[in-house]
Amino acid sequence: MSKKQFKAESKRLLDLMINSIYTHKEIFLREIISNASDAIDKLCYLSLTDDKVGMTRDDFRILVSVDEQARTITVSDNGIGMTSGELEQNLGVIAKSGSMAFKGELDKTSESGADVDIIGQFGVGFYSAFMVSDKVTVISRAYGSDTAYRWESEGADGYTITECGRDGVGTDVIMHIKPDDENESYGDYLQTWKLMRLIKKYSDYIRWPIQMDVTRSDFKETGEKNEDGSPKYETVTTTERETVNSMVPIWQRSKSEVSDEDCVNFYKERFHDTTDPAALIRVNAEGQVSYKALLFIPGKQLLEFMSSDYEPGLQLYSSGVMIMERCPDLLAESFYFVRGIVDSPDLSLNISREMLQHDRQLRIIAQNLNKRIKNELTKMLKNDRPKYEQFYRNYGRQLRYGAVANYGQNVESLRDLLIYNVDENTTRTLQEYTDAMPAGQEKIYYAVGDSIQRSLRLPQAELVRSRGYELLCMTEEVDEYIVQQLGKHADKPFCNIVTDDLGLETDEEKADIEKREEESREVLDFVKETLGERVAVVRLSHKLVSAPVCLTTEGSVTLEMERYFRKMPDTGLEPPKARRVLELNADSQAFKALEEAVKSDRERAAKLVEILHSQALLIAGEELPDPALYAEQVCSLF
Image (cartoon, rainbow, N blue to C red; front, side, top):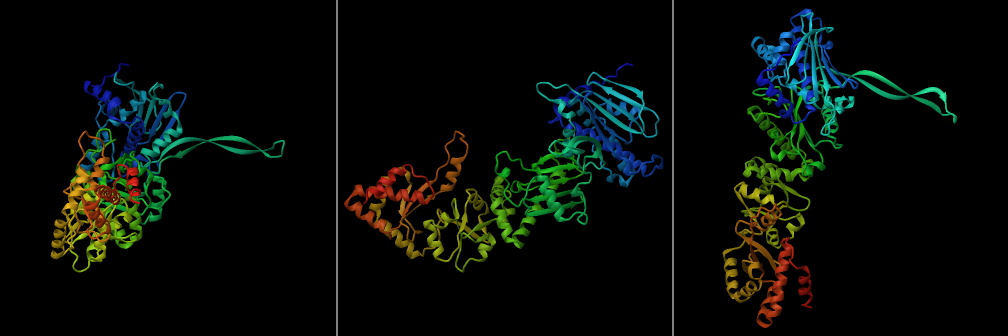
């Protein structure tokens, strides 16, 4: 019998299918099973109006079988089947989709068409079999026909169609697996455990039973005794047909069928976490886009989340078939810690069904999900503060970095979720801070440091706290960018106690400082001359109460920003540096000692300047360029 040729365009597409379209070869089983599911959907739908079908929903199934000796995998269904013409049309012309045509006709003629999920939209999934097979045979008998037909091909060189026999309607797809080579061990796909794993991974929620003959070994007593009197055992091997897939996913079931406890157990098993999630979000949306989602906010900080290899995203399904194991586009960067599953029949898939087209449906789902996540966190913050504070310790950093991502476009929406410590045991939201402000306080005071304790012990904090004002302790460099983006809260401006004017002096106090600076000009000039370019300005401080010295900055770059840019990968450009200001407390004993030394012993005065500068660096969290020299300078004063 003569071999028929694929059309020229189809030959090129087949080569593309085998070598380019699919990222992972293992996807072939998902595609063949999905096609089998579509075929059953069609016959099941037909049975609703045609009593000659003679089958109920309980009769339908997909059978996956393996013959290691023959190196074949067979996927059989008892669905609608194909005639000779349909084999020619659907398999002889690549990208001709019988499923898509069926869905189109169904939508035209019946309102119930929306209830039938047809995944095979492109007619190319079948050819993924050639990624692992050197020959594919399809035996199919269409409903209403007594004749079966065999379609067979070894790839782009063409195909044959001949009559054959088959008991009952349906289709067998027989894939002859390629020999192993140095790059690929195709024989792994002939292992039952491997196929079961792929079914669980990609097709676990196909609505029809996917069955396999599974061989298991067990030990059984023989009834005889060993010499020592212990019972003898023999290995007993049994083969039973088992349903591999779960069929109905937990997220497709109603709340009356599945409790929150069931969902928590599902989370622990699915995502390998031993801790209950901090929050569970169940979504059943209908409208412009219909979808269901089951989302979880982890109850502890996940180790993999802190790894550079962490891949954010939700598992994405279309009609029960997994499309993407991680779809990051469904989550705002602030919520990358969220785990879960989204399933929608309305997604526009690309040709390989491995990725999603970036379209309106995806954006709508993402917007709705991120809104639900924010609402859940807001509810937790309001109703269970200890749980929220624990969540914030785990993932507050992600919230904050996500807030300033994309030039801070999300910072406003996350404003109400931010919390900061005002002491070691108390946190405040921005609204709580402004609500608690005493009369007369005009600014929101904050300090950026690597710890709460260090921020509270900054010399500049003493004056603020002595007035009864709370201080927001910000422990991430990114907090400063958040503040810059927000600008104000409740019409109160933010004030960095290190760099900004605290606004706590009276006009008389300011005038007094200016007068004392003029009187101390010789000392200030000496300090600047001694330190040179290490500081831009030396002045008397408006902020210090008991501390003798502090280091502040002028301009848009702070010390925290300078440290942040120093950590960045080398770009060949000089990282921005802060314009450093050394502030001295004119009322401190150290300053008075410096004044005396400038008049009487300038060598000693220079040592005092160096010590004061080193102390300012240490207080500001900076490293000393030469710690040993600093120790020598201190000891030399004794």
